[in-house]
Amino acid sequence: MLTVEERQEIEAEFSRYPNKRAVSIDALKIIQRRRGWVSDESLRDLGELLDMTPDELDGVATFYNLVFRKPVGRHVVLVCDSVSCWIMGYEKLCQRLTSQLGANLGGTTSDGRFTVLPVVCLGACDHAPTLMVDNDLHRDVDPEKLDELLDRYK
Amino acid sequence: MEKPLTKNIPRDGDGPLMLEAYEKAGGYQAVRKALKIAPADITTLVKTSGLRGRGGAGFPTGMKWSFVPMGSDAPHPKYLVANADEMEPGTFKDRLLLEGDPHQLIEGMIIAAYAIQADIGYIFLRAEYTVAAQRLRKAIVEAYENHSLGKNILGSGYSLEMYLHVSAGRYMCGEETGLLNALEGKRANPRSKPPFPQVSGLWGKPTIVQNVETLCNLPHIVNKGADWFKGLSHGTDGGTKLYGVSGKLKRPGLWELPMGTTVGEILEEHAGGMRDGVKLRGFLPGGASTDFLTAQHLDVRMDFDQVQKAGSRLGTGTMVVLDDHTCPVGMVWNLEHFFAQESCGWCTPCWSGLNWAEKILRAMEAGRGQPGDLEKLEFQTKFNAPGHTFCALAPGAMEPLQSALKYFRDDFEQHIREHRCPWR
Image (cartoon, rainbow over all chains, first blue to last red; front, side, top):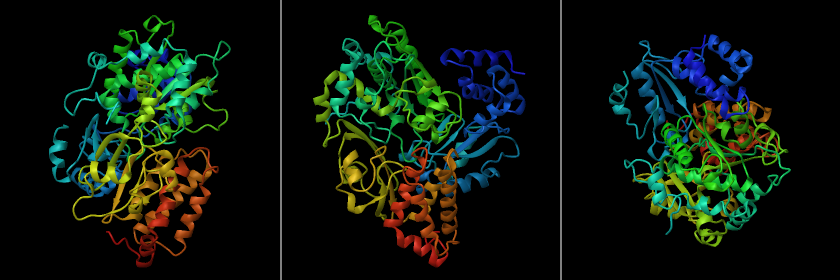
């Protein structure tokens, strides 16, 4: 069941587009922001609200890299694996990150604190290597100082 | 040297330029002026200015607008979309404009929308630009309060609604027709053309999609005229350009310079040259989907025609530099990995070909290259050439590959011969 707040927030988007289905991406993100991810049940409930079948909606959900169809940790680390960051030390950074957290790319730490995902170019290439944690961009990331960086996210 | 696009952008840490400061710097005067000019005359002005699209393709902006049906028979609503889905690897120019001077974009959008008599404007923003999203949301609210948006803008009789759409991440959304599908709440597969979006775009209505940097030029063209704009440039394309450099240089960064500034000036004077101990081997002039150029191209002027003459494309104007301590095969593998992953899977040459190319390169980099691999890669560059695919993603993906095979062939052969990457 969608909550009253979720439903209201999604319905508030309707006025910005000529039909309901156009809201699907915004709606998936609203659910994800409140629940962390988009479950099969959420897809069914959302489909009803948007006059879409769960399969149609899943086709949209699975197309976009930042819609999560599996549960994620409390914080999501997006580490840029595109060309400028690769030149400036992505492989070393990624190795440090995954071994320090004990989670591979795509995985979640056993305490549920972090999920680590690769992401395409974050558009801060003059400060490579870069990564994001939740909504925060971190530039010129020093693999030796990952501890400090991650410590801010409990 | 004039820097119209960036002159008002506060330095790091000073916070964004919001409405009060923007107006103090002359903001929204161009909208006042434009609303007193006939829409067709704005289009003519932009045509005369020589402004070409800054998203990568370089299509003449005024000409694009001239394809939109006008007059009382024209279908409505018409749409204007700002493409702020900056996801081309190596590109970080629109971020500066979005975060630093959001009202400049909104003012540019109002002018473009008025010229084509659009009813609704969308800003299509990539999800990871969280700071830009906050500032754009605030700026749109401010512009409504200021009567620069909404019904009967500044008493002119012209009305425009504007919304921010934050995407959920996929490179394909930056492709014009993929973006339209994404805005309609669908998978961002490309559409076949014709019909072109100018005639049948969002929900089948006339739609113009323009890159952020393109739109940000418009207030200045309206304020100061076409001749002034042409005079900013060193070449035939009008205006300034945001040029960026990333890689192992002393001062990687982003600068607004006259369109047509040489590669050498950007790399040496602005980016400070290569770091000590490394040498330049090559560079992608305008993002991941442009052909490599090399040290012999330092005199090339960075504008659309000159870079094309040198065998590449200006693209986004943000260079990625390959140094002599970085493996060219590894770099191309990284690029093809990106394109293979971001392919939408809609047409066969792209989903099949890019994945094939990526696998060959991955194997080569891991020491499992085989005789015949280079021929297979060369086949892919032809199989995915322009005209074989629905959109420009696969042909773009082939540009760095085909040029790497030309300029760095010895490195590929060494990988195969020695069954290893010499840089690992």
